[in-house]
Image 1 (cartoon, rainbow over the protein chains, first blue to last red):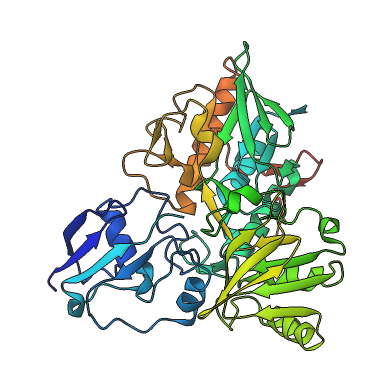
Image 2: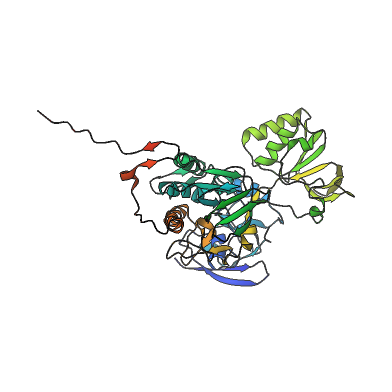
Length: 109
Length: 350
């Protein structure tokens, strides 16, 4: 399976286009960590269980994303700086159809 | 002053298992944790989640793992200072340490093992511009003494278990309880949600949803909260505003202890014993970093085991010791208990 391109805007507003593997069951939060685009300990605190919202991101491209789970929806209901395009990046898994996805990391809380 | 051999900062799985390994070496442990209960993240964030990579357990709930660890270390009678954050450390001339919590509790030990995970859990504060002006003047993030709210008008916001549970509890104490949440749905346990519904029907809790507190008003202390529900913005008189949005770990005061920090974690010597740049202070589990570090509970257990051997040598530099298997030596508790393999029964055949 081939890698796809994903654009991540970090918390300082810097844009990074990175290669993302589609065959490792990785999510966007893990992708951000693997490229060290947010300091350790400030993202993915719960490990990716949709239980902390530290990986909140704003989806800026028009990709059709998997529907929000109940857990993700209710976690976002308690998160801060939430916008209409907010998602938890740990719940977005890297798949071929997400090629050219662009997200921005929400501020650290 | 609390005296112990190994002072463990952080009562998560790694900190708890350290008590066991230290106990085999006859070293006594005391644990400090900012949370009011042991277990760290396993208890605070995901007690009902199954963990699949603990050796020997094909599946174990995080909460059950903690319960088992507590059972395993019971014979070694660890001490606990819970609900207090380790704030300062002082190195004495003899190389031992005094660690003081923010409440002033002092602990003295020759060895300090930092097993602090991602840090101490601090309340998540909503982004309301003048929030800090009202801290302890009507705004509290943690309910320490429910009596503070007797006959007062209380506004709680949040959608999880703590928001629901405290709303329920305070109906018997406060003059009025208003619960505000951005959704009509709540993330808490079903029976808590049902109880709030019942109290709402009885008029004991006022529920304002989907809404959020966006501002605070008051001169010397909190007098009103500003609530936004859709396009509607209105004020509500209150004496206390309690935002309960869960806890988030922060490295906190440990970052100022003179330890070498990298990537929000404490650098240690992984080739030897997980000691930090300050001799006598070790860092184990998720709180440390070294080349190839993996933040896994099972790695924390390994680190704790090696660290205890080094701590023993540091406390008793002149004593010779070789590690004993529990299958051979059993487990002798400080409480007088002894667990050991049953002796073989030899019976001859006539």
